[in-house]
Image (tube, rainbow, N blue to C red; front, top):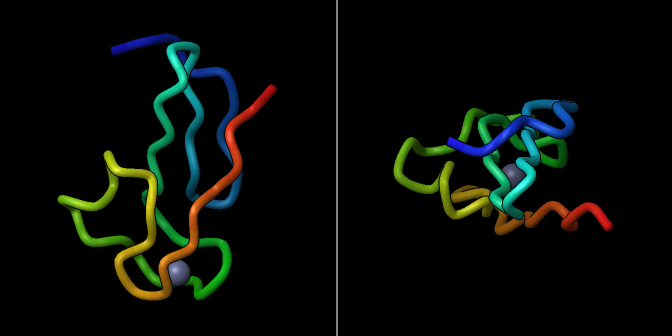
Length: 52
Ligand SMILES: [Zn+2]
């Protein structure tokens, strides 16, 4: 696993560009486990922006 760069509102950004969406900041629901690594909310389709 790459280095954690930022964690906010249930979303984690890693140094290699991976985004984990554990809880959706938009609809506030816990993401489906298999969708966490995709970085996309399985409920509303929310996708966090990558860090620059
Ligand atoms: Zn959502």
